[in-house]
Each structure stands twice: as structure tokens, then as C-alpha cells.
Amino acid sequence: MERKPSLVQLNCQEVSRLLSDQQDEVLPVADRARLRLHLVMCATCRNVSEQMDFLRRAMRQIDRERPDE
Image 1: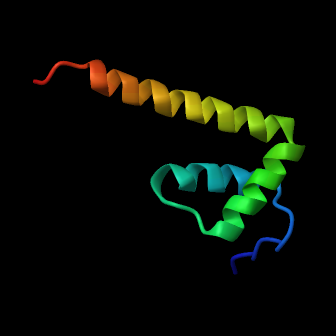
Image 2: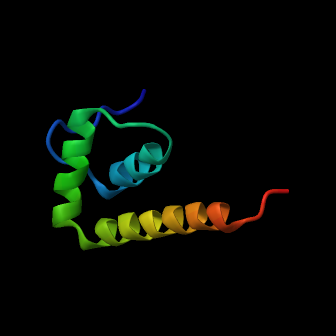
């Protein structure tokens, strides 16, 4: 049985899943708000989020700079 997340606070494992999910889809408003709240309070998850954002931007830049094949 899948555990339902808390309505207020996320744990780091749930944040990791949401950070991954938001790479592929727009998260519901409630999830985005809970994610932001956790990132304000948790430096580790904030660091992971910043690293994922950096990698996403770097990959987009590489795609733009790559000549058409």
C-alpha cells in the first residue's frame, strides 16, 4: 500500500521524488508549495535542487550549441 504524504511537511525522500517529477511535468500547486517550504528549511535538499537545475541548464545549453547533424 502506497503511503500518502503529509498534507503539510515533506520528508527528504518525498522531496527527491518531487524534484525528479518536476523535471518531466508540472506539479500540482499544493505539491509545489510543500516543496518550496521544505527547500527553505532543508539546506541538503536545496543543494540537490540547485544541482539539478544547474545540470538541466547545462544540458539545454549543450543542445543549443550542438551543430545540426
